[in-house]
Amino acid sequence: MTALRRCGAVVIDLSSIGRGVPDLLVYGDTGFVLMEIKSARGRLTADQEFFHARVPVTVVHTVQEALTAVGVNAGC
Image 1 (cartoon, rainbow, N blue to C red):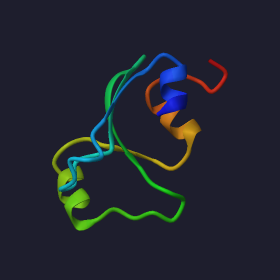
Image 2: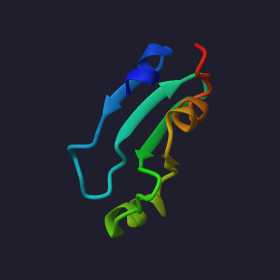
Image 3: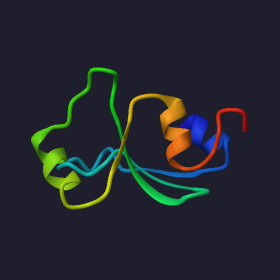
């Protein structure tokens, strides 16, 4: 979240909602992106798979992937 905000994105933390809702709602140069943050070995839960099958969600594993998803670069 820090890197996204530092690069000018608006970030809303949705992680406390649970029930498959993605971790973040991010607004950047490409518009709104629902973003699920996973570690390198992280896997989607059954609730997340259900949600993601119905609504476009971008799953990211690194800061660079998150920045790219909203159209900003790490050198912002």
